[in-house]
Length: 124
Image (cartoon, rainbow, N blue to C red; front, side, top):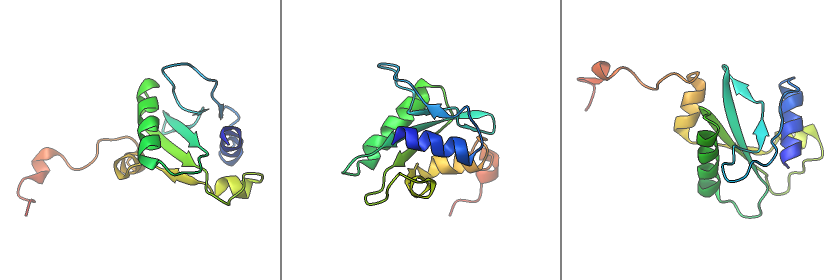
């Protein structure tokens, strides 16, 4: 699954630097390396499990992003019944992250929300 995701992203993003990361021991830094967003590394954890354990696996992705000093992270989860033997199948797998992480990604890594002064008087 890890190799299929790496190959798909390298193809989809036209970036041969994207590859499956070699095991690094106790300070794991994710399964896929070379993915960048706005000049920042994006750690990707890949799971092919029969039982969904999203909270646990997302926690693992967050920890691995911290180990890699990466701002962005994502979990790619294999979908039951969807094969990975074609680009369409690999591209149909799930990508999971917190809403905060998604907003940070959409905001190009900039701090979220308005300045604190702007919040005064807006609470109801």
